[in-house]
Image 1: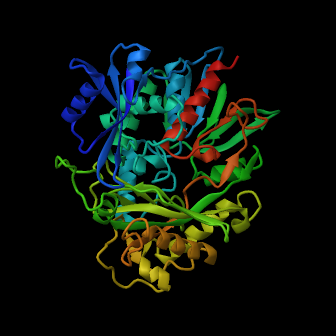
Image 2: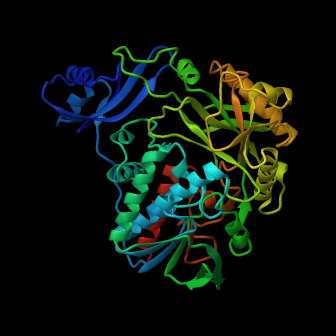
Image 3: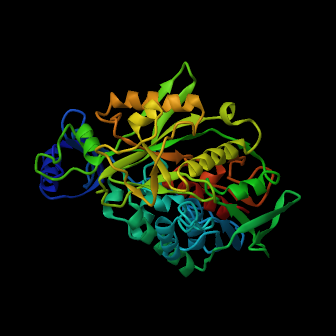
Length: 516
């Protein structure tokens, strides 16, 4: 098998692609599959393909084909020695779910403890929250089966060349994700399809002897002589051979409980707002006004990834979790506090596109005591809750710059699932962060026409970009100085996003399986 890279076409046309491959390899009869596809719109719309061609050629023959080389899927084997017969996993987000999936496949009895509800019930609870504003602190956008990523764009991007990336994509595909996640350079599932995929993975874990305990809260953990002896779950003791904490970045009560039991430290994270533009504005800017390729195939909703640094101020800003054709959602998980997130359905056909615009903050801003970052998040979210009277506070960008409350929207209306209220977001953050947000948006307006449009909508507050703490761990993901406790995923401070969290879970399962 060979891979041919950088096959450029001006349309997403499989007949033309096959003809181009035939010309390169000088053969008519062959089988191929698309390995990767991306869009380059810098000058004109071009599609860049990498294809796998099932053909047997000598190295001399391969060298004559432009962009070609031999190819074999990178693989990895799981070493199994004498793993514990039972493993308790707290959290069913990507890290916990994939850890459970791999362990269960290899004969370990896993017990997944999840404070929130299964998808089927979680959907109803969140819909009720959108309609009534009544929050369930245990099951919401942050907590419940699948974790916070279930209510996002479902991005599956990863910079890592780890072969486990492919395993994650193939596992999602096996359980119902669309074919395009295996080939798109920036794959996404969408919140609507991701829910079914997660349920299907849960069912397979159960079929392999696993168990899920939903609406079960970890109250305490007992660590004696460098070893976990038990967990307290819903007031009752639970024992296991090994324990995995895949808590997610918003498990604040668990962080408080753990701070004197395991080693942890503060880490940098980022805060800011969601910004909404018309989807067409972003598409026009990214595709130079084009809506289709040269064969009139519609182009997908456009995305962007922006950053800005002010070295003099020592501050950096960037966009995060961009949701083409998406929606802003109230992602609160604590009473009297409010934060937001973005999500997209698979079609990405909403009126607006949104992303987080956030500024990195560290101990110099929020304080040096352990969990000061978490307390900073809570302070901001409490202000936002009061500002919007429990509704998502929103503001036109021009009004934010001028420090005045929004009274009327312009040509852009908020795409928010739930309640929102016109407000003045100034004063929620320290002055240097607010100034940096404006400076960054103005800079990005030079790169994407319309990004700094007066009518762009800001929604507050985006405070859960990542965990505010890092749990110290050894080279096999075990908590430092605790023999049988693994700390993984976003809550541990060592992962960010669905794929990296899933890989963290897979690696942890491997470490557990190879223990002697």
